Structure formats: structure tokens, C-alpha cells
Image (cartoon, rainbow, N blue to C red; front, side, top):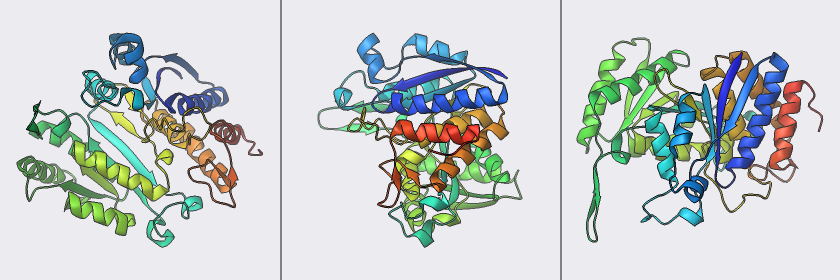
Length: 357
């Protein structure tokens, strides 16, 4: 297979983790006879510094003609002024909107080898394997807003069509998993959530094999910590999903472990680790590249249709963890502490067939 993959390393640790994911993708391509062509573009803070905008037109245009996009992270103290007219996060919102990426898929899988790395009791997180489906281009982040000296407002607005399409993504995913969907809203307070709930129920009638449960977001937040293994697929609005996925990431022990995919209808998918730019550890070799590497596995399967290759990447990650190798964020006293680059090398060696350090 021949595929064009655009790299958006971004800021902070983004370039470090993307570099390791690219090594893995090149290894997969060589092993299976694929031709992956990589190009690199600007986004976020580095784009602001060079072009004055967080998402240059050249970047968006390059992504539109790609087969897939792999992103690192954006942001950092240099661009952290919330009152600034141009901020790195605008690059993320812009590329999601520009590519029509309305569904963010964030799997949360707790590896058996890491049950003791989480702050949650091992017996609580054992067997956790859930998927959060977050609506990505609507809701409070995109509604009308105004900011004044004494008052400000943001508008949480959803159209029926937006809810219907994200609900369908969730139910389709559940059909391939354990056939359970938890729809998370705040329908006891918000009108937009009552619309959300009604439309989700309508979509559910097309999937009689799937069990639907409605949950208020505050209750879901509590249950996610107390009974995380009860969840299969969670579908929720943009802001709620943003918060809940960060909470869910800690079940695995570290933000650095988790991948994500943002998809639309027939457009190139955007793949990125859940973590941020972590400027405090940038350039120190401390970043965990597993989230970025696992994101590349999602890229292989979802955008390129290479399920076997994706599974091999996942198996390589599990193999390296089983051998006791850890980056600083998940390392215990008995583990083999390795750098960002060393972890990437170990995973690509496992793909090649040799696991020895």
C-alpha cells in the first residue's frame, strides 16, 4: 500500500513522541512492503512564531490531500496568555473543523502489566477496556460567545443532525465491542442535553442489540472512578468528553499511554496522543511515546485499513511492557526505566521480531 501521511509535531514533547511513532510506522512499512510517504507541516505555537497563525493555510491544504494526519501536541507557556488574539489551541479547533472531523475516539485500555501504575486500586481497574466517543465540532467550544470586563458567556448549542451522526458512530462501535452505550449528558439542567438525549434514543432504535443507558455527567464522572470496568462505549458532548477523557486516562496510570483518533465522513483521520505538550519535560527524554505509537496503530487500522499491522504494533507495546520497560511516568522501583527514544526503539525491535534490549 502507498499512503501519504502528514506529520504535525507541534510544540513541547510533540516532536519527540511523533519521531518515535514515525520510526514504528517506517518499520511496519518495511516489514509488510508498504510505501508510506511522510511530510511535515506547522501547527500550534511553532506555527504562530513562524507565520503568525496557529493553522497556516498551507498546513490545512496539505492535510486535506493526505491519507492520514499524525499530530503531537500544541501549546506551552510562551503562548499561554488566554487574552491573546492568536493561541495554539486555535490550530486544533481549526484543523478539526477544516477537515470535518466530528468524532473523537479515545480508547482506554488498562494493560495487565500496568495495573499497579494507576492511583486506582488494581482490583478496580483490572479488565478496563472502554471507548469514549466525543463529539468534536459542536457544543460550547463552537457556540456564540462574548467576553466583557464584567460579564461573559459561552453558548452550548447542538443541532439534531450533529447529535445523530455522533450517536451513530458510538452505536456502530458498540456493535463491534460489548454492545453497551452510555450516553452522558446534563439533561436535568440543559436544554441542549435534552435534545441530545431524545436524538440518541431515536438512533438506538436502529440498534436493538445494543443496550443504551443515559447518565448525567456528574454521575458518570463518579462511576468512571468507582466502576470503570462497567463501561463499554461512552458517547458525549464536546466539553463533557474533553473532561471525562482526561479523567479516564488516569485509569491507565498516565496520560502518556493513551491514543486518540478524530474522524469524519470520508476524510483523512487525525491521530494524536491524548497528552498535552508537557513543556516542563520537553527535550529531556522523559516523555512517554506509547500514546503516539498507539495512535499510529489506530491510523493504520482506521485510515489505511491495515488491521493486522495495527495489531502487531499493539502487541509490540504489550510485549515491551511485559518485559518490564517503562518511561518515567509509569516506572516503579523494580522496573527498567528507559528514555523516550529507548522506548520507541524497543517497540520497533519487537515489531521486527527481536525484543532484546
